[in-house]
Image 1: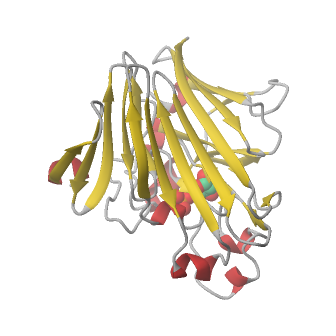
Image 2: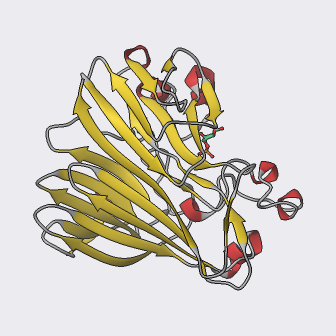
Length: 295
Ligand SMILES: O=P(O)(O)OC[C@H]1O[C@H](O)[C@H](O)[C@@H](O)[C@@H]1O
């Protein structure tokens, strides 16, 4: 059952933004003349973004689990403060060698606080915040204030700002793990995975690669939908491209077996080998901006 079937409470925050409760979990439903979007406060997880007169930009698994424990499969999970398996991330070693650490950090598995919301005729804006609790400190012993700002109009901007509130520098990594909706795998082409924009990549098998010198703008063109999704990123040092294909999808319990046919992950990331150092009192922002244009 999807969370949409079990809504128990709905509080209007602005003319365009409602705070929804379903199964004890909170969601923001944004219905604006320029776009619709949904955000889960669990994970500060963007679930959907659909500009008016456009197809949905983001893919959501039909078997995604909304239980406030497991990270949601689809949309834009926030991977933070490390990307990938903890054991491979220098920013969490040597701690991660001895204990059971979650892949992609802990931001996507925790409840965030709603800081504020605003909307007018042009945009909707919401900010969510994560601050450390003892379990997070066990996994990553640093003082931080993490803010996810969503600016929704005919484009969507997600600014993830890491503020160091402690008195020692720390290194962090992460990713905005965007799952894009595609019509079918042989209809799409990705450009911008290298800085010179020389390579255009077709999707014809499983892929899980790190592109370490991407262009600032990536495009995902879909011949069948006759549109391209434009992904403009800042603050990252790599792009991850992921599709698990048939065999991979079969072993992912919260993805239908044929789910891989309509999704592609393109993820602006800060990889563990090249973390960002944040000095006390300083901050760093990882940004992605999504828009759609006709082909
Ligand atoms: O299943 P998850 O923990 O959400 O990870 C899903 C995927 O995320 C990234 O794209 C990684 O590059 C993949 O190796 C990983 O399988």
